Amino acid sequence: MEITRKVEFSIATNRRYVIRESEGLSRPTCFVCGEPMLTTEQAARLFGITQRRIFRMIELDAVHATELASGAVLICLASLSQTVDRESHAE
Image (cartoon, rainbow, N blue to C red; front, side, top):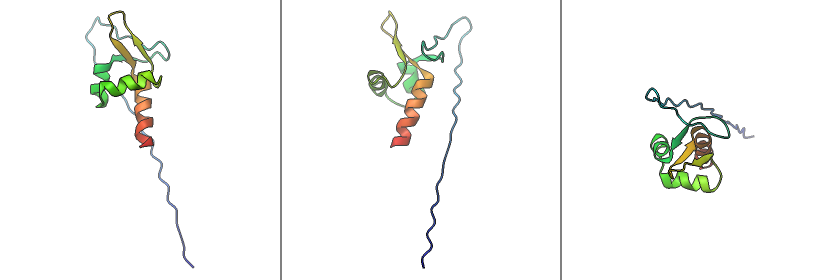
C-alpha cells in the first residue's frame, strides 16, 4: 500500500510604500478610495513595469485613474498594487 501526502503552502504579503514629498506640495488622492495617486511615470518606476502596461490596466478599468486638465494621467497607488499582485499570482 502506497502512502501519498499532499502539502499546501499559502503565502500572504503586505507591502508598504513610502513616498517622500517636499513641504508645501499636496499629493492628490484617489477619488474612489482616498489613497495617494502617482503619475504613470512614477508608478512604472516604482513597480518596475512599463507605462504601456499601466495604460492597458486603465483601459480595462482594472485600476483607479484620472486625467488632469494638463493631460497628465494619475493612477491610484493602492489599486495598481492590487492589480499587479493579482497578475503576478495568476502567472
